[in-house]
Length: 115
Ligand SMILES: [Zn+2]
Ligand SMILES: [Zn+2]
Image (tube, rainbow, N blue to C red; front, side, top):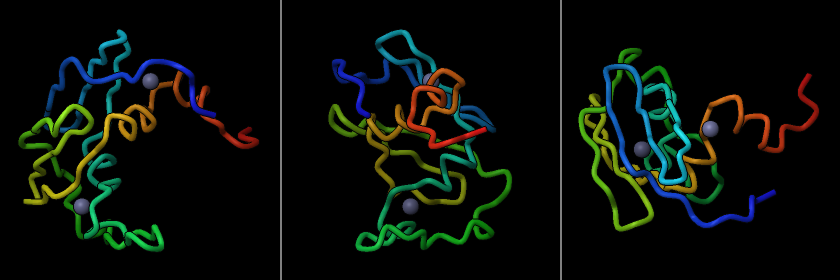
C-alpha cells in the first residue's frame, strides 16, 4: 500500500566504504549496505527489462564493493558509481525509500505473513 504523503527526496547522501546513508527531507534516515544496494541495481544490464529477472550474477560483484561517487539525476533519482566500475543504474528516490532497510520501514511495508 502506498503511503499517502508528499514525495520525499534525499537532503544529503553520504558514501562510506561499506554503506550509503541517505538523509531524507522528511527527517527519515536510511542506511543501506553498499553491496546490497549494488546488487539491487535496476539497470538493464542487471535486471531483464521484460521479465524483471535478475541478470546480474551476484558472484561477479566484489564482496567489498563500495560507492565511489553519486550524482543526482533530475529531481527523482540518484546515479551511483560503484567500485566495480558499474554506473548505469538509476535509483529513483521512490525505489530507494521503498528499499529502506530500517525497522520502521520494514514493518510498514507489506510483509506477507512474516513470523
Ligand atoms: Zn546495473
Ligand atoms: Zn526507513
